[in-house]
Length: 287
Image (cartoon, rainbow, N blue to C red):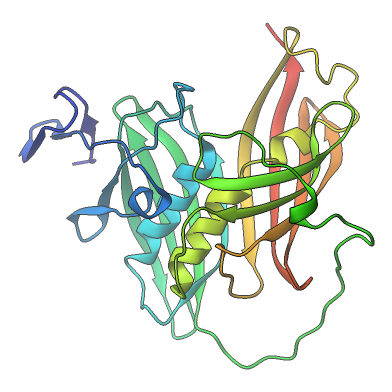
């Protein structure tokens, strides 16, 4: 029987018993990133996670991606670490309702493991993610990307206002879209490689939608323009500590058929290219 989340009880009440249509459960809203990434196991491959509360009425996409990656990681060998994820936003998630994550164990190998995760709320699936995990191994290394020359340091920029669990300080274009952003978490996640990878996934969704609008003739005319994130990809090149500042260099790549593509190259404070994110967005006139 597919797992379904029925949100019918007052916030804070818990009824974990299985029902004919699923399980009824609500969780208090998360108050920090560590709590947001703390999942409750319903079965070995099904997890529940709380939502943050932003006041937007909808879930921040980076939250669901980060939690789905954490759910996948809970089912693999701890020695394997996330190296990539690819996700599709199926429908808008609603806050402050919790989210259920069903993990499918696609493959377990000596070097790599693959997991598929479906995130759901009471109305059905909101995200479909596939993630790959890799056991670290010796390798030749080559760098071909670097931060832009003269990029400002985070101490030279002001904080963006956000209800999310991170700091962001951005350089913006004339349309107020970020072209470069320094970001970090509000709390120290120590050296846990999976927790830090999930935290980076949480941050990575913040500015890509704006970058995808680059060059559109109606950018800034929000009464006429409708936008939405369609999918999200993230590749981890090096381990990260996301309490430290990381620089996201954002570029709009192309736009066609009402879809815009954007890419973020992510560097640590010393200029090492640690990760790459990409996203496609729907960009069209309101109907």
